[in-house]
Length: 219
Image 1 (cartoon, helix red, strand yellow):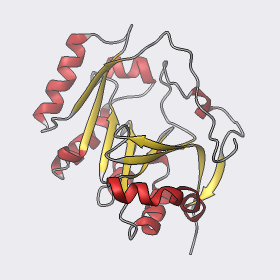
Image 2 (cartoon, helix red, strand yellow):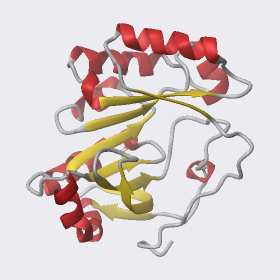
Image 3 (cartoon, one colour):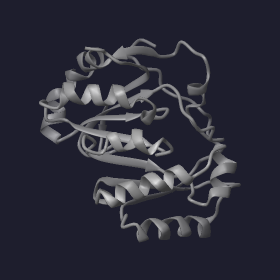
């Protein structure tokens, strides 16, 4: 059996109702296909040694320390990044390891990924946390360097699968890129698709970009 590996940049434990329901451990991947101006993890694009390539079994051995918390709170593992949808093989393999544990599996993603890869995860993901930036393609391109077309396609796939109730969509106000009217338009489009759970917030563009290096991995 082939064991897939993935570059892990961080493992953050005991996150309560932040990155999914219950107590979760947030696992961050290295790498992303977007180049967002205000990304707090810009190092994910650099050739760096600030990550470790782990197999699913190796990751399980690390995170299982919180098994009792996951089961008591109906929590589990949330994959973020970076972009988790770059590592679908790894996520599928990890799911096979944890499926009997009773943990939830959540994904934090931009959804800007090939629909074939994205669709593979629909049967196994409990909750989607989606940062859409803005659904206006011109605004999206200026901010991320990519088109929003794939995001909209994948949102429609979620809607067609009636998985809106498992989706929390983050709709930010981004200084210098969009405004409240743009954001209202994005929310309106999402409501037409049947989505109803939104996190509306404003990017703090004057914050110092940083991340907490993972103590568990001794990075």
